[in-house]
Amino acid sequence: MLQSQLPIANKLLAALPRGEYQRLAEHLETVELVEGEVLSEPGEAMRYVYFPGTALLSLLTLVDGSDVFAVGLVGREGMTSVACALGSQLSPFRTLVQCSGQAVRMKSKAFIKEFRDSATLRDMVLQYVLSLTTLIAQTAACNRYHVIEERLARWLLMTRDRLSSDHFHMTHEMLGYLMGVRRVGVTNAAHALKERNLIDYSRGAIDIVDGPGLQAAACSCYRMVEGRHGRS
Ligand SMILES: [Zn+2]
Image (cartoon, rainbow, N blue to C red; front, side, top):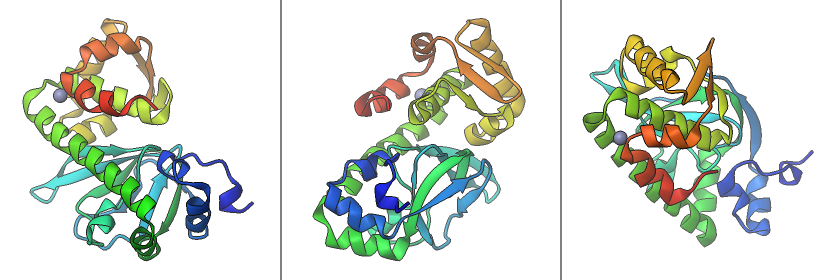
């Protein structure tokens, strides 16, 4: 089946006028992404622009060349490689697959050409760049000012919103890696949220059992940023 005939899982692509999407679809290919896969490294050329469907990606920044910190999340509401829209083909981030799933991708060169040619695509992508910048800035402040339990609640809610599911696979190791804290710190925070009957977890599967309660347990950063863009 042609890409243009498939249901459009990615919200940015789905929001394009049909004709614009058809033109873009000629360049799109569907890929299955696997948790832990790295799609780009800082300073490297980005071959592709990814538009996640069921997959969820984290944007990580490196500290002292080895430690990492997640500064952004990209799900069906967004795309990777936004630097292409700002005139650079070099990745500022490590892009990691946080949750396995499907995405479509197109070559960066083809994207840049379409971006230059289409005012509609340009407006839409720049709007997304603004919302992603807001998320990154808020996450930087969050990492400095808020405690692990609040940050964990926020990260779980952001994950839920992008996957449109209260149930997802995510290990404490992965959460610790993303949040730049030790695994034991994540385990203690997760245990505290479980004790409050807000989440449940076992063997890497996480269930959000009380969404409003978890939202109340999250720091204000969740409402500041996500409230603006709405739940998926
Ligand atoms: Zn926060």
